[in-house]
Image 1 (cartoon, helix red, strand yellow):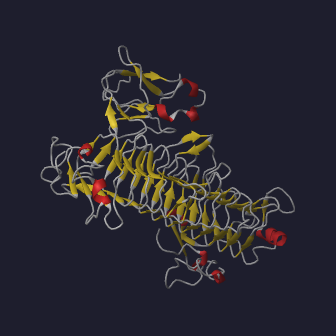
Image 2 (cartoon, helix red, strand yellow):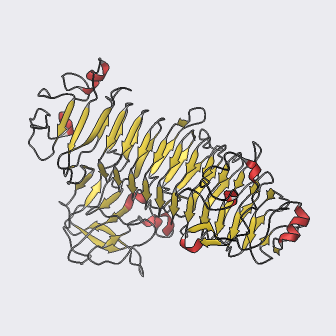
Image 3 (cartoon, helix red, strand yellow):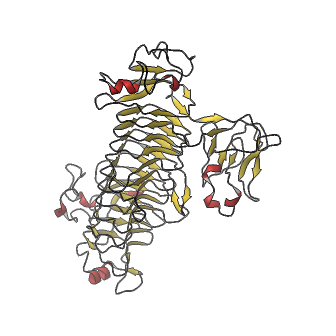
Length: 572
């Protein structure tokens, strides 16, 4: 291999011929020309094993596409000198693309109707063609994607195929991910043969980062059948990248990693997934300024997967100032499965200042997870999913205790409540719901936990009821505004069914909500997203201000002092 002229700055341009020296003037033509292991002055491994004096930078040419099966960086950086993978070239050109699609156009295929009476087709070999696709999970064309559960569309100039094997035909919600196929045929004829088809390669990762102190920025990753970026070492930063159509977007088993300004779309597994084990939790993950959308739904064990974020056994992680939308299996899901060793819940994390909408299942779900802060998130319009239990913020399963849920605005959860404390948790400490706003939900709060605390919340515009509690459940509740018409609580009183009860009936039975009231909070324009008070709102001066930090965080400076009960807070 030729010595690299300007090491540790390495340049790669896929449009040039092999034999370059890796300089900007004479770049390498492929990743394979970089010596990742030993034996030359362009060896990243040897360089970092010695006494590095600067970062190694791998510069990928903008506007170029690499259909390489794998970039594995076992030679990485140091705390002072990280390995950097970034773009170079004309700034107006698009990000360099690592694309794991490959051409199987040598065979001829045709569309075949999968079931009579449907518009679902699959791809099979035409006469004289090869017998089908082997070890292929997804087939793409022109960077587009079919949705696994919805939107199959019609066979026009972008024909859709929702392929699945015969065993799945009786269970359409369980169609196999690995058979999902789609193709474009410009003629509009679904039976045309010999069409170009692209398919992702099996079990590959576009970027497999196995050494700490690596920074990846301004790169587009497409069509990985594994992770778009797999993080298998600590102290890795992924910044301003696009992960498009990968089976998993980005994640791994490593602590102290950052995703900053990353967009992840059309993943099938979790768009962002981190998984530790009990006693070996993933820590220090920061997700900020990211956009995660259109993660697709598939079923695993009868439960919806394909969430925007799916997390096991993490702690001390932060998910902030990001946008999550149209993720079919939920947006941010802290999973536990601590009944199935070795997975545990997610503890001591923060989810804050996020915008979430159009996500199925639950937009934020904490399962077997404790001591988390869920604050100042705006969750609205969750999508209806196949379980019809779409919701906004849910704490579920025993062990989800000592969580602080405050300052959130949740709207339009028509399938269930905007806020749910699902099980009798609280053994390790009460879950606290403080200064939240529920607007236009089927229900405002559903509480099945005696230890729960509800204070300074506004519940307004509920379709069914502002509050429902389980049999024998009396949470600690006060200083709330239940903005109904006088019979807006559906609670169990003396063991009765949870039919509508007045606030006065609930107060007499529960000895709670002594300072709560029933009336229009006079929010400025909740339907338009403005949850501030109008002058004369009964909520002004009605909140319990004795709670102190952290519940006075985010109040606008100079506002009336009782904004603990309002949506008057900093922008999301």
